Amino acid sequence: MKIIVNGTAHEVQSSTLAALLAELGYGDAKVATALNEGFVSTGARASTPITDGDRIEIVSPRQGG
Amino acid sequence: MEFYGTEVSSRLMLGTAQYPSPAILDDAFRRSGAGIATVSVRREAGGAQAGAAFWDLIKELGVKVLPNTAGCHSVREAVTTAHMARELFDTPWIKLEVIGHTDTLQPDPFALVEAAKILTEDGFQVFPYTTEDLILADRLLNAGCEVLMPWGAPIGSGLGLTNIYGLRTLRAQFPDIPMVVDAGLGLPSQAAVALEMGYDAVLLNTAVAKAGDPAAMAEGFALAIKAGRLAYEADPMEPRDMAAPSTPLIGKAFLS
Image (cartoon, rainbow over the protein chains, first blue to last red):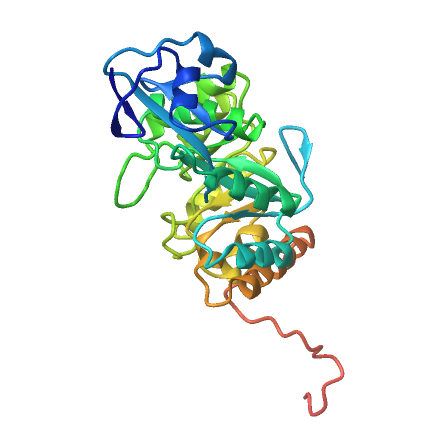
């Protein structure tokens, strides 16, 4: 299945957002997620399915003004 | 001073971006006495721990954090970013930026109001990055905002308070609303003027981070803000066009 993660194409096996984070090596990293421009909370990741062509954003704390 | 019922001790809010090093950021914050740090959310690569390292640094500062939606150009983008920030930083506070113009980074007033309404209804406490426009301010307050953050000048420009009249009018129009001059400041004297005018605080980043000595500049801003606030509280004299001698005329020698 081909999806876009943080603007880059990925070929992945996972069927849920939680599984995808593990597959991509995020482990227990402090991240927040969005699927197709909509927020997905940590608690909802395990029940959020991933489908072909999805656009996923994975972000973490950064410097800001 | 309170923002959404939370007592804030310092009138300086300081950004965390563009410092030459984490150590200099830390030093600048300590010398600034800032009580609030602005932060953002950005893409994290798998296996990287950049976010965690930065977060550890900020926690060490012992300040409150105000996450932003910097760089967002649409309501959807800003709302989603705000939700991600709330989860990451565990705060209902959000500095809401919805940019409408690429070169000036001027806010899109229509999208700003719409996003502010959505986020307020969802429990956020919104700090809108806005202009000095009175009607926009009124709409933001009606949308549920309890703080306004008008720009002094375009973000990162260092031009200072480019519309003194507009800022003075805004301050006078909503005397009970906490207001922060956010963006565009380059020098401590400009911050002092904002505080003298009755603005409750200033928010800046580039002026400190891009100074040759960020920590010294941070302290300079802290002193200017203290001076400006003292002057405001001291009820300044009214300016006048003609001279008025300060030395008494009575008793002057050679008076005929």
